[in-house]
Length: 557
Image (cartoon, rainbow, N blue to C red; front, side):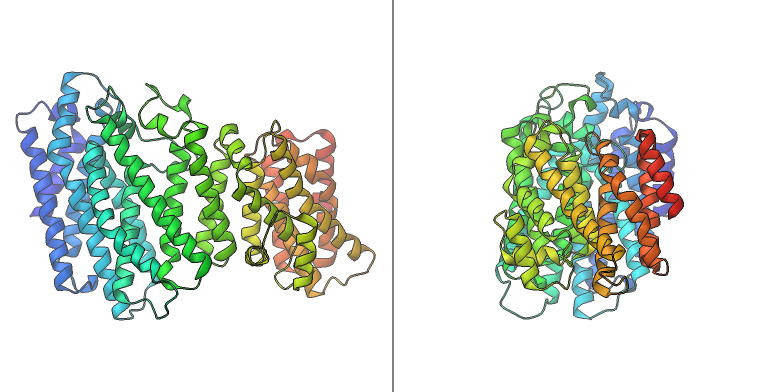
């Protein structure tokens, strides 16, 4: 009956505009009923989860309650997406409707977050305690469903940003001391127990909630701060705009503190499970989405006043600490968690997202000490195979310099070759401003560290000074192809026509590798992918001579 009821309410909300619904005398009661039903469903789900000891499989009412909650969130999304409200209407009717939603429906957001976080924590406690085997397909489906639910729940929270931020901040401040204590115990030995795992999952879920509240998925679009967040933080948009801006600023500082503690401990005890690479990946994912929108925001994307949250990280003096923080995190994880694929992937994505922000952010990146070390690490390790001896590493360090330690270089050298190529893509985009001399020098260093070793390998093969079937030669060829692919994928750099000028001299030699490795499917696939990506991304900007080189090399291939 409850599912039928909320389904009918969802249909009403979807079929009638908020402007019409808000004119009904029962609109306030309608919102209060949605909130009350949602609270009961969530709180009863938590109670049942407690009784089941965190075993979701034994919860009899979980499915229909989740369906009912999904219908309530659909109501919220429909009203939040109504242009009459989302378009920032100045009419008194729209303002009254927004106030009703903020007072009567938005309180459900805090309850939703608290209950979902608690249930996730209980489930993690159960899984670790019982040493339960996870079904990967089921886990992937559950994670996707959770992401969709959190994105829908964010529409609830955005009806009252200040109250939602207060709810999340209170939960995080309650969790943070325990989390820092857990990080502080890294290195004492012992396995991760159920209580520790539950705490880490609690923190991770809170970060997921905050990320969906403060950011939107902007795949393929220019990242932008959600309109509701801007409106809540503007002088003309909300009477509590200063408190709202301060709450977001304070929350970001809390997350910075957590990430710093975790990363610094990872430099000393990288193998300790208490430090949770999954939590680090979630933090990086948050900073990736948040930083792309809030740090040096693109003002042409916004219609109104540029104060409030738009101004908070819009200048070099306020953005530089954030940029430095981001690059330091990336540097630490590249060197100390090189085999944690998801952490490295989010780190490279963060670098690339910052590089795409424009010349102002790129100038700050190039001036940053941690970023400079990442460039130096790439230049040292670009052509170093995983099995090289320490004398080769020392020789490479002596040639490049950069104030690097042997531990940093050895850590970075352990990065999988695919991940090294992704780091290179980010570095090229970040260093691509032609007006910045230091950036141009860094870019040339990155590119030269690929080109010179590749021509050395090719020369040795042509002169038969090296056997193509030698495992080290084979691995070097594979590494070179992947790094060239990383260069090709940097098409979002400033003045990308420089890429064909760099690649054209190498194309015949890359094609020539097929003479030696036609039976090696891994190298064949990498070469074909490289040529395909290059043609797709750069063909419209190639000169006549560059086209002839590409066509000739492709034909030979």
